[in-house]
Length: 627
Image (cartoon, rainbow, N blue to C red):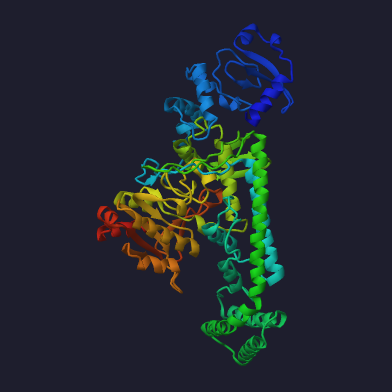
């Protein structure tokens, strides 16, 4: 029994019904008056239809879901002419995650959702063109798989997880500042989360807890790049002069305060003194000369600086991982506490099918039933939707809210009445808020998406129907892979791409800019292409980083499955804002790419024959990328 219905039943059983004080016609219709402990006032409840009201009911009045104070309304069945037996049958099926739902009854139930959230008539007045196409069916074929053994989202759990992630971010900043004398490199923890999830075998969807090795070499390298000071490209010659002086001074101070060999101390001091003499003896030096001198000093001192700071930096990275493990344990305890409060047993994972059959891919299903969600208040003002729970308000653009409503109705299987919709949207917003970070623009690059015009062209020309890296906020199709199967599965996610194994289909892949994730993505694609004779195609978009080239770029260009490649020059194509669903992005929905984007076609023989990247088709993609 859900928490809210439990509260309702407790309130009714704890007070004597004063039905006798009601008009006889209301009593005959099933109405009674009861005391609400939670609200501290009387309400009216109909035992025949399960309606509840604050005001005295009127016979013959059509029930409005917005006036249902306890959110236990099932009157939509009665208003649509469904009998009590059909309503009870549907309610029974809703108690089991992933159960079979009668589609006719589900459609009738969804009419209540359309009334509750404004319906299509309200969306028709919004001044925007849909930036998605949910009418495209998936051509992805996969092998049947068991439901994932993950806990369903709940606002209390998600709020607790957010606190733990924010504490980890704060600890990371403090460790870098106190131990290394620098601010934590921007977005480095986000890239660490992406890199760790490539190898993590833990259960928490956000924080890593079971990684080998524990120390991330990529995070060590990012911190080391900012030691002794963070280098930012200066604009003026005077700024370049100051930057060179600060770097020289910082390098000298570092080797004097850290344990390092005498030879390293000697090398650094010699180069620093030479730099100081050069600065004293030169005047009216050009901007380029300062930068060249800084590059030389950094190259000569870097080995000694690495020797001096490596052990300390590794201890910071190891400490962050240990704190993450502790946070995962706390989140696990909180999750168990919430599930026990709803009388839900976590149970054991469902075994994978012994002989999995091929099937059209479907959204992720969870083996643990969802607890009853608490009430989340919704307020719409100036095309911004605010969702309020537990004293905290999360906001989303109104058009993205309607998008979530539509994709939820198309993909969610355990909530045809949308009873959990608002709470699950709140959890979704909270999850990505924790994942992005708290600094300005932090995490923005990890959620950038291709433009709708380019996605439309990919579908029309190459029959692309699936995104390998997306989220419910930025997806174009109703089927996609994303980072978080537990929160995103209700909105169409098929789970993380590295655990997604299609045997045929046409896919678009624009992975987050994590070198480890991009490398693992190419390896996974090559493995999939080599295992099937059915048509399989991946159109991959990655940054054209060549100074030095990334391992993913090298592997893509040398892959035996590469059929075609081309490059979109910097500043000549756009990405959708990574925060496009937030009100802060309304005035800047598209962002010019400051780097080139490499587009590579990876296809097996059958995929190449079916979706051949001809010169004419490539030209259409290039034109679409510039719109």
